[in-house]
Image 1 (cartoon, rainbow, N blue to C red):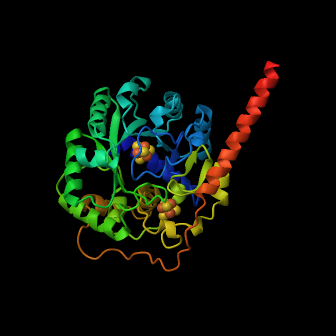
Image 2 (cartoon, rainbow, N blue to C red):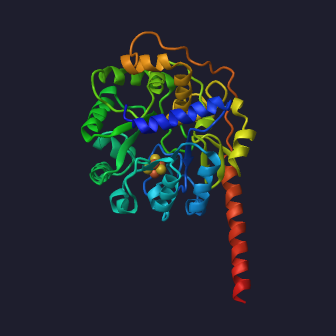
Image 3 (cartoon, rainbow, N blue to C red):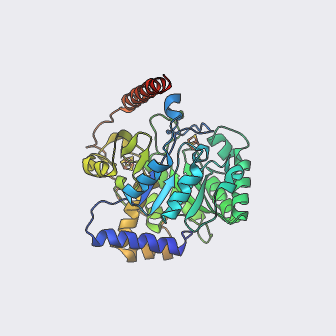
Length: 382
Ligand code: SF4
Ligand code: SF4
């Protein structure tokens, strides 16, 4: 397992403490999106489809650090958009590391080599480089040639300077088990751990045809894990999450496990679905109708098997049944035989489409604030 022992111990200790305190719902990873602007436009991305007025907004350093303090999760993932575009990303990372948060800075790596000097290697900092496959596959996935080569060069440069680096791979339909296994062999040669997840079917992603459904996801991962027997692929996941991907666990998601803070506020209910936002983490936890989300409950959740929804479930399952987790770690993921029962979808509520409404309301707020600032500036100048 690629997760350093020290990090694993700290996180295990945090989970045990929450259990002892009798907390039913607690966060594991803060998903901090300080901006939505990106220097790529990937076909499967559901995060950057906003008007310029929103893409130009940034969370301040203070807002980012306050979010981490408010939430209290031991880990902070910084996706985006592309976080390295944020002019104060170094200060955000520095402030989080000073708080002893494990920071995973998720980047497409186009700016990584150029900006490495802004950061210092630390056991608390990880660069998580977006790499969806080998050269041809990745460049197709990000809709731009040459990105794979730049990302690999940046990974090597970061490793040479002593930074911890892993890659995050999103899997879409059309990827064969053999291709994925070849990619995992490559990550082994590169000496990086892998975070892997089936792509979530974002309603606003330009490419709607290549999202995997649950059945295909489980079959694909079974074939991949069968090809990986005896290899030393290094996954940044718990053994039970991998077991879930291979169809051996019937888990319900834990959307509060990885709460999301972005320029809209705290996003309801999870990183993948934006169905409104609230001003504080407390409000998010107390006012979200958690029981109305998840596979079998809500149409948009039907095919979700993403790590941000289920890694926290797997972590809880490992604490509840450590022997089961140990068994999977020692014997490997089961790749044959019957799968665990699937959650029935016949009672799920229909999808609600609220994105345009949310964007319009945020745009009105931005315009109002800009108009007020203009009036104030004129008054000061007069
Ligand atoms: S690099 Fe990430 S944030 Fe940027 S377009 Fe691609 S998926 Fe979206
Ligand atoms: S299944 Fe859970 S984690 Fe996935 S989109 Fe729905 S609420 Fe979010």
